[in-house]
Image 1 (spheres, rainbow, N blue to C red):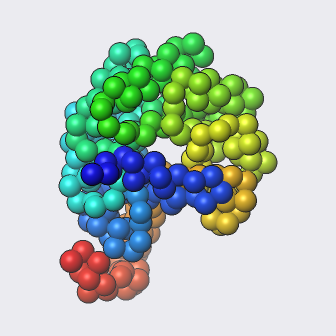
Image 2 (image 1 turned 120 degrees about the vertical axis):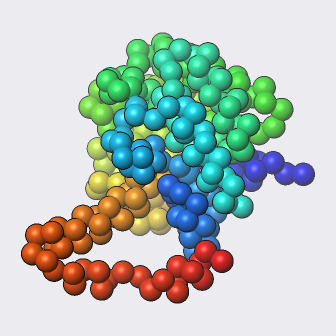
Length: 269
């Protein structure tokens, strides 16, 4: 019988990017699958928002695992866990996080090279050792598991594209199955990353990359697209705008823009 992670791995095709949708509860998971999602992911930011917390190291591993298990239970498609920095600094913790993620049914996780909550980058050698330990744990599971290694320093301002690529190449050599450097400066930088690496590359559809379409990502060799917290933040935008009107001037007209509940009901049944 095919393991869910094998299905997930097969969806990663350079030049034919998978749209992996980040969701935050059973309802958003079921809705996205009903509308065509072939794979889902959690979002640390979106999850934190549901708990009334900001993003960036405010979740515990137990909370992230329980949340991921809830999404998995609602989804017939593969689910990746957004597991921040692996919930610890040392390589052994990253390895243990992989094992625990597999136990709750995740098809894979991503681990970033960012110290949390400080938002600084791990030293190069430690960052590579962490991915090597996680990759080794994934290979020892007895079934497939897709490990995505993230170089977040461009996004956080910790380092430039050259350093991100140096790290990504080292992560690939250490056994990462997928690579991810959120928000490089432009499409040319993203194309450079895709061209220099052999394993699938994930691109975050955020910031200026919202102006690109799926075909344009395909053209430069991207294998997977993720949304981060963008879909969740659209819902928060609607809440914010409606509340601003209601509490600011007593205007309830924005409530008229809501989707018909019958449409949601159809997607959730």
